[in-house]
Image (cartoon, rainbow, N blue to C red; front, side, top):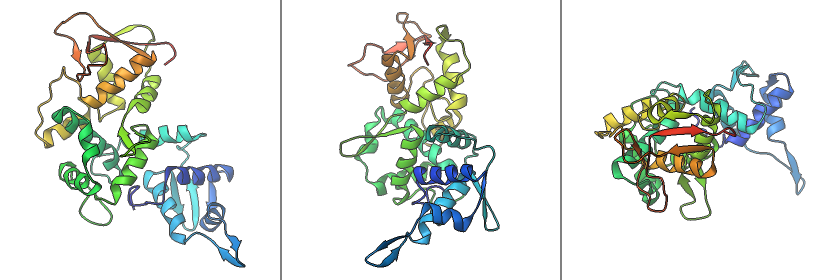
Length: 296
């Protein structure tokens, strides 16, 4: 099963399994793990416990992403998954996903985000996705995704998977839950903030805009000009303007500029400027260089 097919294998449940394996030095029997994660309890003189499918889907999600392997009836933690905190687990999973070939089952998480970013650039707004039902989004997305493996049927995306796709994107820092209807929004600021902090570049020094974006594309292949983004643009017949940034990336860059984590440097109306998606409420509309601040 894939991560999206393992609907009860949420990020917090998978993390609980990983933390349990760490406590047992990386190995535990399947039965013991199930007992720890799904303890039984008494209610009205009856023993109550979660259905076996719940633990099975947690295990399916963990094995699909490569964090855990099943050897006979024993679970083994992948030594490469050395995350000690929930946030570090998000980074580890993200690192796995950005390197997956597009035909792999779980590649659909970021491939679909790349499509959303590219489609938003084509439509010149990121609000269009909020107007769609899960079925409508799944239908148009599935037609735009690259061909690849799937567990249950020929579709890589369907209406059942859409909510779980959103849930994983929130965990990865590419979407946010909000108190509104719909209860989510496309916002990659958290992940952008994290990836900028991981860039091995000198702080408080101007970097040409294209050089900065080139560095980001290596870590974020779903942004403008990245591998996933460019392949998506080809599939949906969208001609990219290399100097015009998408709404999704533009708003994330503005957020980090406003937070003081980076400075989008402006130098008049010159041809080398990269243009942000228009936003009448923000003073920055284009930039020629970026300076990452010392605290990032």
